[in-house]
Image (cartoon, rainbow, N blue to C red; front, side, top):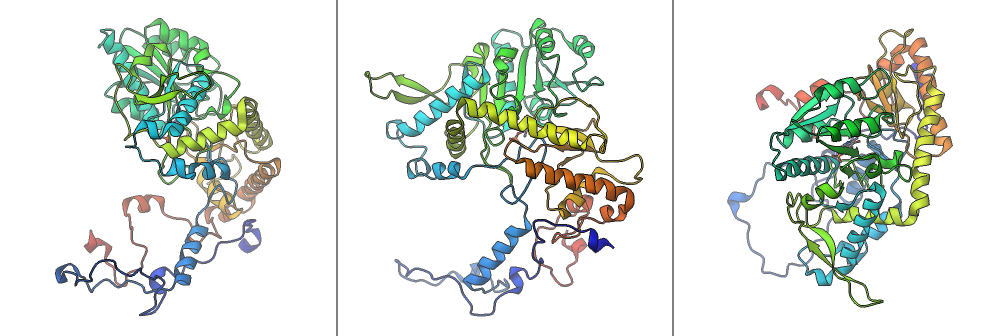
Length: 507
Ligand SMILES: *Cc1c(COP(=O)(O)O)cnc(C)c1O
């Protein structure tokens, strides 16, 4: 019965075996080494090991091995990837072509600025565009990730209060619906996190906010739209309350694909924000980087920006391009990243913004929000939802049913893999039971959104009629359901099955 229910539109990946260690034969080789241009010498005997049983393989063995491994993986280039809050959108290949242009790819960070004027012009223009999109004054492209941008923002807020003789401002208010990096980065700066609850609609509880506001508040950090996918309806009141007690407002702008061309954080009253270029502006991410998390600030924080930033050092003659240079702002919190930040990411984001233009960026948001609301409204009534309200670029539903005992969000996610989809974000945000955070992004077609909805609806039916199919899922992946807890506690980093391996003895 199980077999009939298994569907995988993308086709099942090939079996896991054999691994490269089982391939090849003695003397087989796939590499032709160039003739040495130095005299050959014997290697020092004490550095040679003969107990390494390395495979001897042909080029074909290697190509097939790595291609097969790549097919075990799921990627945005392979299919729909609705991982909420992570914005797994399609990255145009044009971005890659631009980042590989030799003038960009081969520039060395220690080159004299006079020899890399094109690269600096690109960075300058990107700073200007990001400042315009934010409605704030200036931007530093230094931070290498969203979390590092947050860290920079909180350090700037702290530096501002110290410069004003207000060292007693040590508290940062963070709503319980915040992205986990918000309290984490605040704690890393040495400031104290004060958590406040959300109300029944998913907005910040204003009474609680007023209670904690006072002389000791350095600022507030808030994710917009919040991680429940909804736009904070009291944002203006929140900004007023915090400014009223002398604090500054930080906006986590990782997911600006819900706001581009519609609202500017600076107009809403924010003093500082970060972008995730590797989400909103389509630079690739996953696997740990590289990312880019530029920070934008209003006039209060201008002198504290991390540097160097790109400035015009000489306007030059009429009709000639200006001369760009690298400058450290007066009271900068310092450099956060070697040299100029992750330059390749900046080229990709620059490309994305240029090909879209202002109208295109607005359309990005329109489509991201439309796609999310389309899927949300089609799943409403089948999947429980904590808030039945219009969402931004993502929405949260609950992965359990009154009439399907023992079905959890994890079972639904694992079953989605059988249908050829990457699961949504599971169990986040923490304040929603059995949370499934779904973000289709603007790059998906209606057909892709429909296919995902049909799979979700079919799974909801299976949950009630044949729950074991869900409990045992995934059925068609090379690795079946893993024991998440054991995998984390008993980490094995070796891809080879070693006969008679004694895990206990090896510890
Ligand atoms: C992804 C994300 C972050 C963190 O960004 P990183 O680049 O992973 O450090 C912060 N806040 C929100 C809302 C995010 O979605």
